[in-house]
Image (tube, rainbow over all chains, first blue to last red; front, side):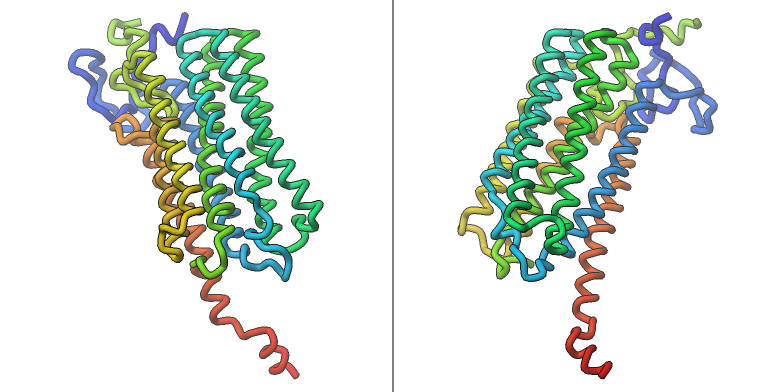
Length: 227
Length: 134
């Protein structure tokens, strides 16, 4: 039996049901209505995970904000960062979040061809982002501004590196999703995984908005303009 | 299976939404249009951030605040157009979880800045401390 075709109503919906459509008794929220549909449970659970991931990033942001003036006599953000590189990285990640959205529409249309094309684009843009970031990190280390140089650089490498690790893991996940869509088709469980992947990818771009705005743009302001 | 459980498979009217799921009936064109609009707004806000950073038209000490506001605005755009977190009644669960997340994030970031700022102000300077220990 296809559980999609005969989908039971979500007993915990908060909106009044349309008259006559599914007149199930009001559920009190004590489990009386049975479990919510799997799609909602999976999506909501992953959303909670993402929010806790965001809280982890918030701690790293707080560390950076507290420490970024503690350069221990070493180079400052203003001297180190190349904003052109940041702009290109931002463009790559923003474009990849868009192609990821297009891929989820292609999945909705059950189009294998467009799903694979858009996922491939998403992955390539993600790889371009990671390449630029690794290049930036290597150039910083070569210039004697590695993570052990000062508290400012430790917090910088932790925050931005953690985001980079997330993006790298996302690219691996993306490759897995492409293989699974190809080998197993648009099965319900695969689509649930893809829903989680797209949430993950979009959330990473939100984190990046914070990083390029606060670490790169605010961080490189001349000291007299900083709060 | 009783008749009350028989639904139009395509219809999601009245169901709670998982985050990231567009619930209402939209044509493909409308959905693509939503993503394109979101992309245009995000590109505009990103460009504005980089432009504000480079210009001297904005009052200098206000630059950091302007960049923060642009960042928060862009995060909102991403949440609405890409993650589809809206004020829809269906979405209340997701919004409440998000609100709690935002509360914790603000507590961590602004709390750390506030406490550490005061700590720096109130701490005995290192040189004075050395003199006292002598």
